[in-house]
Length: 291
Ligand SMILES: *[C@@H]1O[C@H](CO)[C@@H](O)[C@H](O)[C@H]1NC(C)=O
Ligand SMILES: *[C@@H]1O[C@H](CO)[C@@H](O)[C@H](O)[C@H]1NC(C)=O
Ligand SMILES: *[C@@H]1O[C@H](CO)[C@@H](O)[C@H](O)[C@H]1NC(C)=O
Image (cartoon, rainbow, N blue to C red):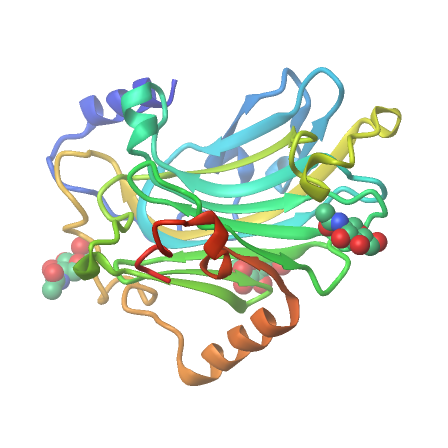
C-alpha cells in the first residue's frame, strides 16, 4: 500500500527533484497529515483532527502513518501513554522507509521510539532503536522520569545528514552520529514515513516477556496530539535531498552544544537501563564500530 502511494505521487510529480515544503500544518491537523491504516476502527481521529486515539484489544491493535515521505527533518509528537496496567503493550512513534517486500525490508531504515508497558503502571520503559540497511540491534532503553500516562509529553526525532537525536520534552536522550566514514551505514538515502502504532508485544515487551498482557484490562488506549513536522517532503524519489539545506531548515546542521550534551549525559547516567554498546555478551565478534 505504501509503495503504491509513492508511485502515485511520483507519477503526479512534474519535476524530477525533491520538493521541499516547510512545516505544512505545524501543530498539525491529523486529517491532513496522516491516515489511519490499521485496526478496523480502533484508531480514531477526534476533535476536528487535533487528537488521535489508538486502542488495542485481544483481537487487534491499531496504527496510523503520515501521508508524506520525508528525507531528514524534525518530527515532534505529543503522546499520552496507556494508564494503569499496560504490561505487554507496545506504543510506538517511529520513522521507517518502505517494507512492502522482503527486499525493501532487508535493507530498510528505521528510527524508533517504543514505549513498553508495565504491570504496575510505572515506570514505563522507553526503548529507542535505529535500523540502517535492515540492521537494527541498537537498542537503548530508559526509564521515564515522569508518569507518561498522566499528561501528554513531547517526543521528538531530529534527523539530519550528520545526526539522529532523540528528545523527550526537549531534552536530548540519544545522539546517533553519522559514521559512514567508519563504515557504519546511516539513513540518508531512503525517504521515510512517520508511523504510530499500538500493539501487543507480550512475548518480549515487559520483563523480557515474563509479564503478559491482562486482557481483562482491555481496551488499552494511547492518545496522540500536536504532530509537528518541519522536514523535507519527498514528492519524487528520482533525486536525493537537493532542495533541502541549512538556508531553509534550521535543523539541517543542528547538533548538540556542550550544554545539551551535558543534559543528555545526565539523563543517560540517571535513567538509562540498557545500552547495546555496553552489552559485549551480545556481540561476541566485538562491539559494533559506532560504539
Ligand atoms: C505543539 O508542538 C510544538 C513543537 O513541539 C510546540 O512548539 C508547541 O508549543 C506545541 N503546542 C501545544 C499547544 O502544545
Ligand atoms: C515495572 O515497574 C517495576 C516497579 O514497579 C519495575 O521493578 C520493573 O522493572 C518495571 N518493568 C519494566 C519492564 O519496566
Ligand atoms: C537551498 O535550498 C533553497 C530552497 O530549495 C534553494 O533555493 C537554494 O539554492 C539552496 N541553496 C544551496 C546552497 O544549495
